[in-house]
Image (tube, rainbow, N blue to C red; front, side, top):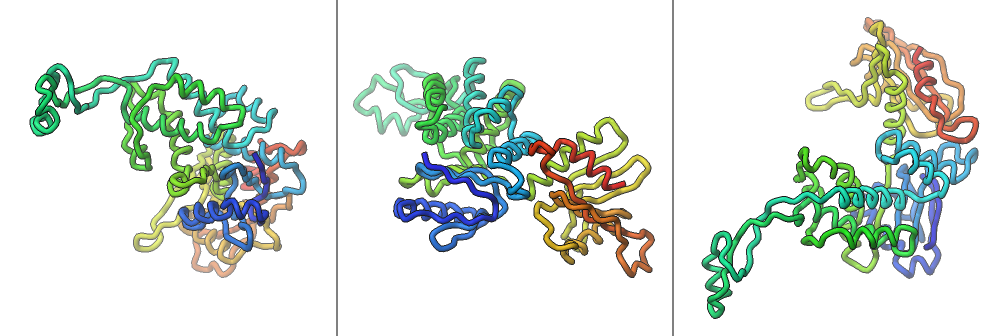
Length: 404
């Protein structure tokens, strides 16, 4: 298995052998299916955007890591930072022992998600698979259910001893297990030659044979869990991630391709929000994410984070996953923050960036003669890494200090 490790916004150029094998063509077709949002095509390669994660096509694995301060940390360090961010935001549910194994053995994201799925499925199998009623139509040697007269005449004109009927069956062949079976088949295809191959084959042997179906977003939305099937929730979430990221166009051809990619802008926002909520837990300070207000006609505006302190003070925070190269933010960002301040009646607004630069003091917007509130904005910076090169767990405390 070949492997390429790159950082977001970097360019990847492929060898003639990789181009001839159709890898570049597969990547471009996959990107086109997703409105070209993951990367741009360049001569003999691709230029990455803000998405991080992993792509596996044929025998090549492309791992994309975050970029901020990449010179100050190793690939393994940024890989662990990404995994810890995914854990903190609930996108990766790994228990304590599992996370220790992840950091020690340096697995890639596909292996982590595959192992979680197999572990969940194995637990479900041993706790007992649920059964459901379904209708089945076919020939029987005994009368059972309702005779399908048209089908019976068509199929049993000669064999009068048979009955073509529609009847109820109570078994494990239902939508939930059919979806899990499809996800298990994808895992099987991508775990050949890896440490998970034996585990996957064992789970496949223990899992019952069910009808093969085409699974899409609507299939998952149609599944309603109840008290009896609640323990399937995490396995179905992992199955959704695996199946919906398995390119439907490419899987019908010779190339097998699977991707698990995350937008770093959204992941950074979610991580900051989760650390702030954890820091403010048990206090009178409220932290809200993505609260929106009407702006114009049907348009709305929605800041990333709104902090409401016990004394009634409101601070609006907008996260930006990028290095600020100049001494000030873009005019568009500053205008956006001013609008947030006006609509949320917040005297203080802050643009929050990752990095070890010194944060700017709050500066008032000019020409506010008509304003009741004197809006002020600052540029805040928090380091993603601590002194040991690991994900800084005190970011929430630092951000609250910046809002003072």
